[in-house]
Length: 462
Image 1 (cartoon, rainbow, N blue to C red):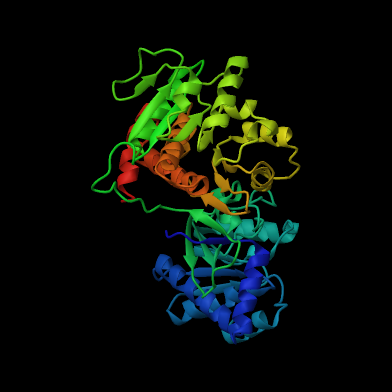
Image 2: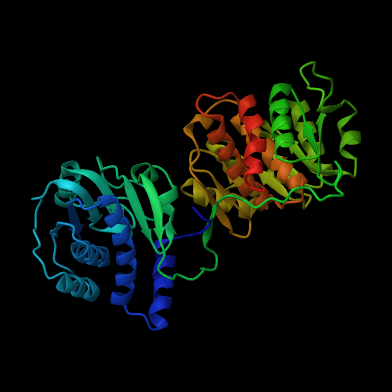
C-alpha cells in the first residue's frame, strides 16, 4: 500500500470537479471508477454469482456499471435497488445496465456488493434501507463495499447505524477517505484497496504515514553525526530505559540517560550522565532531548521539564511531562513533538484552552495554538502540525495496547529527531516504525521485545 492523500467528502467533490472542468463527464468518470472496482470484484468472485445493491445517487450508478461489467465477464448478476436513480449519471448507468432490477431482498449467493450510499451519506440510513443492507449481507458469503460502506460517515468513521455488516473488502474510489483509517468505522471494512481515477494532489490534504525512506549513515559518519539523544530520567527510570533501547534501535548514534543517579539496570551501551541536568543539557552536540517517560509529576519533575524546555535544541515531550506542561513553559521557539494518548490530549486541551470535537480536530487545534507538532497516539494514531498538515497512521497490531509501548514510541521519535528530522517527519516515521516493530514482534510481546524489533523495522526502510 503506497503513501497517498486522504480527502474529506468536500475535497473529493472539488477534486472530481477539476476533472469535469478538464473535459471529463460524470458518466466517463463513473465508468473509470466503477470499472476499476468491477475488476477487483471479478477477481474475488472468481466466476461466482454477485448481488449488487444500488442506491439513488452516483454510488448507485457505480453499482449499475459494476453489474454490467461483471455480466460481460460471465458472472451471474442480480441488481437490487430500493430507489430509482436520482442523478443523470446514475440514470444513464441504469439504462446501460439494461437488465432486471429488484426492489427488495430477493437474492442469496456468493458475493454481495454495497453501492447503496457510500461516501455521500452523512446521516443514518432509514430503517428500511438499514434492514435491507443487513439482510442482503447476511445472505452472502463474501461482502464488498464500494467507496465507503453505507452507514459510515466518510469524514469521521462514525458508525451511523447499529448492527451494520462487516465487509471483507472495501474499494476506495479515487482517494482514501478519513473513514478508511478512523475507528470505529475502519473495523467494519476488512481489506482495503484504492481504485485510482486520476485525482490530482489536493493542496492541504491529509496523508498516510506510510513506510518512510531512511538512508543508512554516510560512510564517514560517527556517533555524533548520527545523533546524540539526552533522555531526562526521573522517578521511574525503567520507562526511560525502554525509550533508550528504542532510540538506539531506531538509528541514534549515542544515547545518554540524564539521571540524578545511576540505575543498576542501565545496560552497558547506554551512558548515564549524573551531572546536574542543566550542565548535562548544555552539551552542544546533543541534537534532541526526550522528557517525560517515568519523569514523575512532583515539583522536582516540573523543574526537570522546565530545564529541558529552556535548553534543548529539539524535544520530544511525552507521558508525565505532558501532564505538567503549561502554555507559559513554551516561551522559547524550539521544535517540539508532543506524543499524548487520549487522556493526556484532553489534559493538554484544557491547559491550552482548546475547544474542539473529535481527536483529529483537537490535535490540529492544539498544534496550532501551542506551536508543537502533536502525535495523538492510540488505535488510530495521527500527527498534526501547527500549519495544518495532518498524517494518519496505518493500522497497527492491537497487541500494542501494553504498558511501555508508548515509551518505545517516544524513543523512536526522539531518535528520528536526533538524526535530523523535523518534528512532523519524526512523528510520521516513528508511527510507521512502531507499528512495523509490533508486527515483527508477534503476539503478546513485552515492551523490551518491541524495542528490539525496531531495528528490523528500520531495516525495512533502507
